[in-house]
Image (cartoon, rainbow, N blue to C red):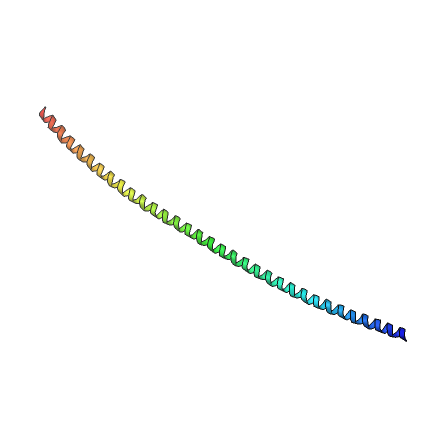
Amino acid sequence: MARRATNSDDTSTAIVAQQHILQLKKERDGKVKDVVAKVLADLDDIKRQVSQEREEHERRRKQKMAKMLSDIAKSVQKRNAIEEGMMAVVSGLNTTMMQLETRVMEVYEVKERQVQQLL
């Protein structure tokens, strides 16, 4: 009977140990699940931050490009205005030179006739 009691105690101890092992495995599995869930949540946060930073970077890049294009357009407009002004000056100068040439030729012709009359 002592042997049976020992076997029964050993069996009880083995069952208790097995139950304890199962409980520890469940706790471990629960902790692993919690860690995995936290890691996945952190990974989602990182992905979201990276996405936001990428979008912000793209927005700033587009703004910078738009400003550069706007500056180029303004420069072209200024250049065109300067060219138009220069053309007006050159045209005015050309007209004045033509008038001056005509006047000089008129004076020359008058003087030439006067010289012809004197001879």
